Length: 524
Image (cartoon, rainbow, N blue to C red; front, side, top):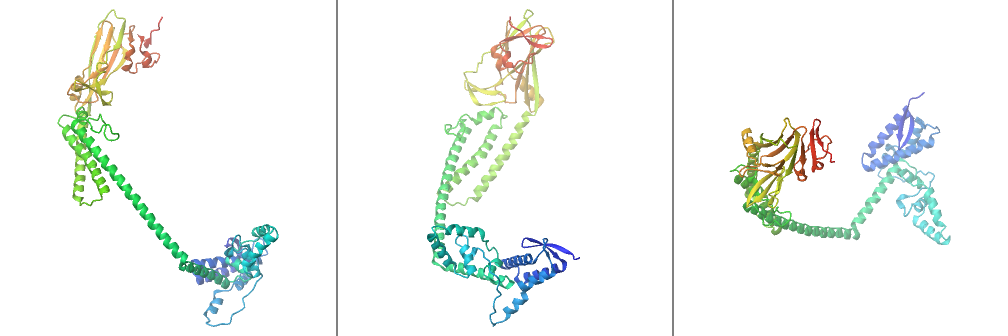
C-alpha cells in the first residue's frame, strides 16, 4: 500500500502516489526555474500543466485518477525536460530534426477567426490556407441556396475552441512537448510585437496620433475658455454680492434701515441693528459691539469685493501683508464680540419673581366675569422680531416692548375672589432680577362684578429684555362661579377643569368651583 496525495493540475483533481508526486514536483520546479517568473514564462508553464493533465487523463483507467510513477515518467518523456532542449539550443549549427507528429484533432482556431474560427481550424487540420476555405463556404452558400450557413453554425457549436497552446499544437498535428509549447508561445508573442511595430510605423498610427493630439488641444482650449468664463461669472457675482451686502450692512448699522431692502437675499428691510441691540445690551456696550460686528461682517464683504475684481480684471497685487492684517483684525473682532456676548449673558444668570395680590371685595357676587381689555397697540407699527412672546411697537416714534400674559384659574382658600399677578425676570444678581420684575407694568380693572385684563404687560422705557413674564391666577371660592368672555381665549393657559375641556372651548361659558374642581354650568 502506497501513500497518496491529492493535487490539482490545471483545474483537474488527481490522486498521486508519494514517489510519483516527488518526481512530478521536481520536474515542475525545474521548468519554473528554466522559464522564470515573467508573464511569458507563466503562460508556458500553464500550458505545460494543461498538457500534463491531459496525458494523466488519457493514461488513467481509474475513476479516482490515481497517478503512478510510471505515468509521471511517461509524461516527462513525452513533454521533454529543460536539459534536453537546452543542449540543442547551445549548438551553433545542427541538422534540422524531423518534428514528432501526432494525430491531428479538429478545433476552432481563435487566432485566425472571422466569426467563430471554424475555417481557421479546418485550415490547420487540413494544412490549408483558411482564406481558401472561406471562399469555398461563400461559394457553397450561393450554390446550395444558403444550406452552408446551418452547416457552419453546426460546426461552430460542435467543434471545441483551442483554448491553450497544447490544443493549438494538437490542432496542427504537432506533439505538445515543452519545446513546442515554448516555441509556439514565443512565436505568438513575436507576431504580436511585430504587428504592433508595423502599426506604430504606419501612416495610420501617425495620423491617429496627430488627430488625438489635435483633439486634445481643442478640448483643452475649449475647457480653458469655459473655465475663464466661469471665473468671470463668479467674480461678477462676488462683486455684486459684496457691494450690495456692504451697502445694506452699513446703512442698517448707521441709520437702522437698509437702502437695498427691496433686493432679496441682501439684507432684511426691518433688521434695524442699533434699535435691536438697545433692547438687549447694557448701556455703553452697544457702540463697542457694533464696531466689532461691523469688522466681523465688513471684512468678509470687502474680501468678496477684492477677490471678485481680481477674478474679473486679473490684476496682480502684493497683498500678503494686507490680507494677513485683515485676518488678524477679523479674529480680534470675533474675540471681542464673543467676550462682550458672554458678558451680556451674565445678565440672565439669576431669576427672581415679584407677586401682587388683590382681593375682589364683592360679597353679593356669585359669578365673576373675566374679559380681555382693548388692544391699545393694535394700530401701531410693530418691529419684525419677536422673542418669547415679547414684541416691540413704535408709539409716537418711540419703541415700546410689550409682552403677552397668561391666565390660569385655581380654587381659592377663602370665601372671596382673589387675583394674583406674578411677575418674573432675570438679572445679573437676584436683586437686579427682582427690581426688573417689579418694574414690569401690568394693569387690570374691576367694574362691578367684571374684571377687565390688559392683553399685554409693558416694560419700563429704559428696561432691557431679561426674559420677563407675567402670570395671572384667578382664585375662585368653592360654590362661586366665573364666566370667561369670548376674547379671553388669547391669554388663558391650560386651565384645569373636571371635564378636561380645551382652553379654546371654555370661553363663552360659566364655570363653578366645586370640591372636585372647576365644573361647567349646564345651560337650562
